Image (cartoon, rainbow, N blue to C red):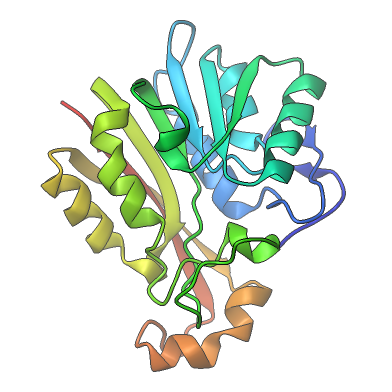
Length: 226
């Protein structure tokens, strides 16, 4: 799931340093969802867990003022390099989710967080797996973003978050709705299992998260603060 060469994500090519999540199907699905929103000059966008900076650069190309956050220094460096190479202005900050930008609110918040269910309940503190491992149910980071979203969004602001249906589409919709946001599934896509999910078939079946299927459903969750 990780590459150390240039990887494509929408228009142009992005450098992905070793250990940083390379743009993949989930990145592309979320980028297309962003394109369907009214993002343009004067809009403020926050990209949580930016990784390579693919979504941040994409939003900047749409004309938005973009802030990107990641907890990994290598991802911060990668996103800065890609914004520079794309000649796009992106403010990249190291930190843990919205705590990296305290007291600020945005018109749009985008996130492609870690969401893969893991045999380990502990989240990795380093290495490539930090970009996808998310506890037994895959919701360790997703739930935190759901809880932080209402404070990070301005009135009328929109959260767009992509994750696997394996970690519970309805759970995300309910949690965001309970926080007072209007929720929907903006997009879906079926993709073949990658190497991480293939290696975890037995674990996922024991958890009751997987049957005999060999395709993963990705969903883009949309939540609006009215």
